[in-house]
Amino acid sequence: MGLDRADDAGVYRVTDDIAIIQTVDFFTPIVDDPYWFGQIAAANALSDVYAMGGVPKTAMNLVAFPLKEMEIAVLRQIIQGGLDKLREAGVALIGGHSVEDSELKYGLSVTGFIHPDRVLTKGGLQDGDRLILTKPLGTGIINTAIKGGLASEEIIDTVTRLMATLNREAADVMSLYQVHACTDITGFGLIGHLAEMIVDAGIGIRLKSERIPIIPEALAYARIGLVPAGAYNNREFRESITEFGPSVDRLTQDVLFDPQTSGGLLICVDGEKSDELVHDLKQKGVEKAAVIGEVISGIGEKILVD
Image: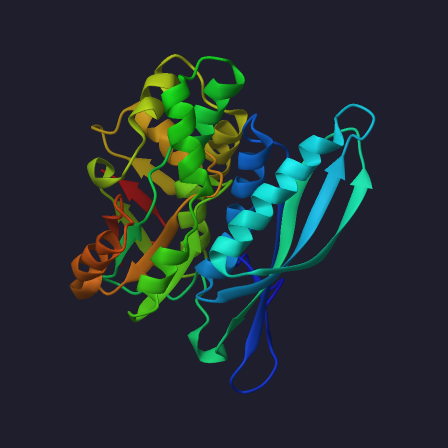
C-alpha cells in the first residue's frame, strides 16, 4: 500500500502475520517554546501510524537548523521534547539526520507494526456507518492568532497541550471495535480529509455541525479574520463537493476547512456501535470524542453539512 491512493502511511507486508507501516512528517515551528514544538512534531508524526491501526515502534529525527542564527540549546530542547513524546508512546529513537538550513524544521520518520489483515485505510465506508472525531477543531485558526500576538496565555497553553496529545489512547480503544475506515485530521482540514475518504467510493457523508467539537476561541478569532491561508485553499479545493445548509454560518464553515496540526482521529464504525465506542473513548480520557455524522448512499460523492 503506497502511492496508489492518498492513505496516511505506506504499508509493506513482511510475512503473513506482520506488516510494517512507514510514514514521515516535519514542519516549521507551530509554537514559540522549542520543547513543546518538539512534542507536537513527534505526536503529529506518530499519528499516521495510529490512523492506520498500527503500533509505532521506531523513529528517526529529521532536523533542519539555522546554526548561525540560533543557539544550539534551542535544538537540544526541540529534540528533548520529541524524545520525551516518543518515550511516552513507547517508541525507540534509533537515529536521524540533520542539515544546516536558513529555516528551522523538525519532524520524524516513523515505523510501526500491524497485522496485514487489520490495516485501516481511508476507504471502506459503508452505508449507515457513523463518523467519530476524537479531538476538537480550530488549531490552525488559533495558531494564526498566536503568530499575530492576539492569543491569550490560557488558550496558547490549551491548544499546545491539545496538539501534543498522542492519538494512542483513541487508537487503543478503536482497536477493540470492527472499524471500517480511519484517518487523522491534519493539513487538509475536516472537509478535506472526509473528501479523501469518499473519492471513488460512490457514497456520501452527512455532518451535523452542532455535534462537531470546536475550540470556542477558534470561532472568536475567525470572526475577526484570523483564518489561515490554508483554510481558503482547502475550501477552494473541496467546495465543489460540499453543500452547507442555511443554518451553517460562515465561521463554522471556516473551522471545517481549517488546517489542523496533530489533529484527532476520524473513525468510521457501524452505527449500532458508535455510541458505545464514544463512551469507551471518554472512559479512556478522550473527552471530546463525538459522533459528528453518518455515511449515506444516494447522494453521490458529496459532503452535506446541516
